[in-house]
Length: 218
Ligand code: VGL
Ligand code: ZN
Image (cartoon, rainbow, N blue to C red; front, side, top):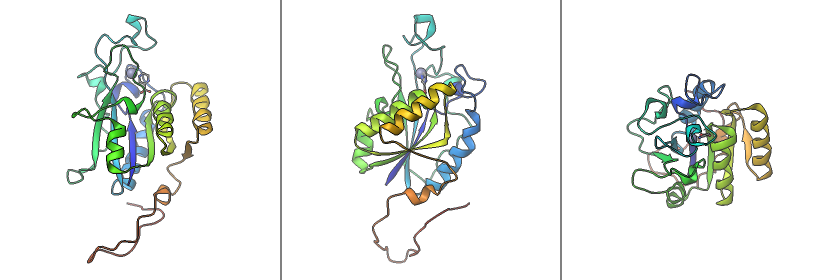
């Protein structure tokens, strides 16, 4: 199995939010299409930046960022237009990060689920070695997550037109750094399904024998 990481698609990071990324809303339909296309084959992880109200990284406390994604506020909620897997599909988790008052907590590898399990623990337990990343922001949480995933020995794919960054220059630099670390980039229009690891040719009696390939349009 592979994982699709949907990083910090929260109200505060899109237009109208406290730390709005230009073009943040525009990636949401693309992320929704990825969720639909990969949904059946991927374990979906939604991360949420989840800061205490007086976080040291907030500008009133000398940090670089405006107050954003404060625990329990509307700004910290996932953008309502973002699709969640259907009720019958249990293959997803919501992980939160950034709770520690002294650390920025950019990487999804610092995030934990309600039971306190880390992303790495969750992925390891499922035997997941390939991850696809989309979301916000390219040069902070997406980059930190992609680099940590490479350090953990994973195959890492970032969907270029399903991420958005704060500044064009820092975004380009982040992409170059990720590429140098072995992260691969794709567009949603590419046949993402073709990148999925081939499933063993095990046939379940009574199930359709056709293997999905190429573009899956719905
Ligand atoms: C992020 C800045 C501060 C992010 C989070 O999600 O990339 N950026 N907190
Ligand atoms: Zn933050």
